[in-house]
Length: 285
Image 1 (tube, rainbow, N blue to C red):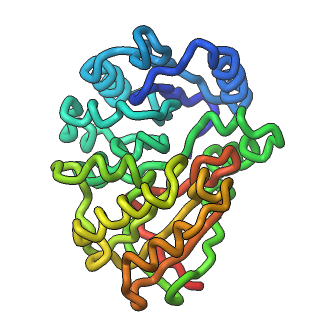
Image 2 (cartoon, one colour):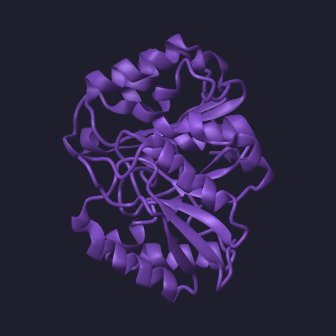
């Protein structure tokens, strides 16, 4: 939880944001201030060269600066794209473990969030703060305020539809499937044993999802996890592509004993809920 008057850092660890988003980010800042929070902006938010706001090392140093600032009570990443895994080798995980603070981000920040869990045991929030301005209904802002400042669980309350099995329990890892698999073969990939693996995707069709699911199978993931959680697969679902992501997962897993569940509430949509990566969940359907 945060409280009124707390300072929060706003960063962009992945692609720099285009200047065309400045008006939207100004509105985001106003809404955070209306909640009583004090936004503190990284020096590396906007694109300066192509999609880059700075080098990977410079973006990592900007992030570490906020971990070292005792006045900063939470870190929120506003970016996405392709570049976040470049930071991983430049982060000081021992320092982060000694100075923990909540980290929020989604999509390409899947790499950072899972690395933080692997190296420090940190629990992070799979959520895009820009939803507070993307969602024109006001529900995201209300849920954020109630959850982060008032201690309710509105943003964390996710409805799961059982696909296979009746319950599952374990620590959640994962996020965007394309970005999660960037960690394969690196020291930042979480162990799969006794975990709940969450996967979602924005782009990509059945062929790409088949590739990703087979890579996870070849990594031994489906033999080790306690359950598979599937979020939204935006482009596939918009185009009503078949086989669906659920059908592909079941076919490739080929294990009727592995619990599987699906939600439409976590992913790239502007109304997404927040899933806690590194937290323990027990789901009974």
